[in-house]
Structures are given as structure tokens and as C-alpha cells.
Length: 263
Image 1 (spheres, one colour):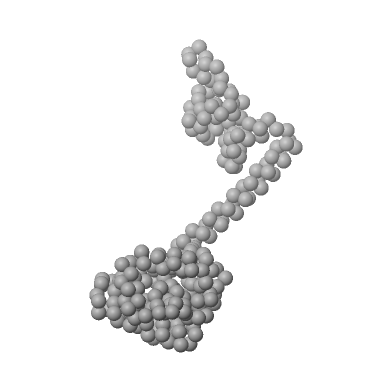
Image 2 (tube, helix red, strand yellow):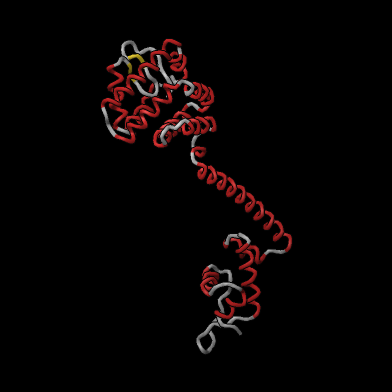
């Protein structure tokens, strides 16, 4: 006859596990002998090994007792169902691993591939990382609202990078973020934004983009997100108003409200 410690050792489990199985009603708890100890026989070892094996295979403890009492056919059916459940769990975990891999990859977790390519292009052109991260967060919102329009918008954004003034603008804003408020730099940025916007309006780009970003409430949400991200944005918006432009993600002429631009 075995003590509980010996039983646990032979079955390859802990004493705590044995007591847990007693509490769950999976393993009968023998009466105490005249010395006050519980003694286990060989059958208890066999039953405990079966319980351990089923538990290690992923069988919920609530079903272990059912399987222990099942005949061959019932056991086969139950094991097949458990196998299907485990396969589903494996697929779920594999999907979780893919998501974690995306997280490790950075931007690709939260934005479409076209945006990732655009952000990588910004980095390649020397745009400061803080500004790239701000762009990414803005595009998370854009992709949530207009997922189908992202490829077309990214074509426009990448083409804008062919204009040296656009890259210069990013770098100037990056300098502001790094060095802090400076009215001379702020006015230089505002002048450059106004110049780029004016030419975009002449080409009709702002009108076309206004049709794409045609949800005023959501545009206001994105603009508030930008304003709250850094005090410099609010100051730049004030300077742009002085130059006849309003808005941020969808820039409009302040005088007549016509025209709109993308992020």
C-alpha cells in the first residue's frame, strides 16, 4: 500500500495534483488506516496515470471522468471531438503567432501594406521617426474609415514625395518636433504648406481629394487627433488661417471653403 507521496511519485504528478483530483471527484479518496494515513493500491496508480495522460492531452478535467467510464466506442467518439477542438485551438494559436510577428515587424500590425511602403519611403528620405510615427497613427484612422481608398491615396502620397518641397516640409516639421517651438521655423513651415496647397488647388488635386474624404465628422475627428498630438499643430493651424487656409487633414481655402487635401 502506498502513501499519497508514493502514489504521486509513481504516477508522475505532484501531491497537490492528487488532492486536486480528489476534490474534482476524479480519483476516489481511500479511507484512513488505523495510523490515520490514507493508503493507495496499484489500481489507484493506474487510474491516476490515466487521469494524468488525459489531462496532458488537453482533455478538460470536466470530461476526464466521462472518458474514464466510457466504453471503446464512446471513447473513440469523444477523443475525435477533443482532437477537433485541439486542432481549432492550434489554428487560433498560429493566427496569434502571425499577429505577434506583425507586431514585431512594427507598422504592418496596424496599417495596410501600401501605408507601410509609404512610411518606409519617408524613413528612406530622412524624415524623423517621431514624424513617421505620427503619420502612421493618422493613417490608422484613415484606413479604419476608408479602407478601400487607401491604395489610391497612397499613390498620391508617394507621388507627392517626388516634389522636393514635400520632403523639405517633413524635415522642417521634424526639426520643430525635435527643437521645440520657434516662430521663424513655424512661419517657414506655414509658408511652405500654403505654397504646396496653392499649387495643388490649381491642379484640381484638392477638389478630387475632397470627394474622397467626404465625411466631415470623421475629418474633424482626425484633425482633433492631430491637434491633440502636439501643441505645434495647433499653432501651425493658426498660421495657416492667416494665410487663407483652414483644416489639417483636409485643407480648405478659408475664404470660400472649397477644395480639400489629403493627409
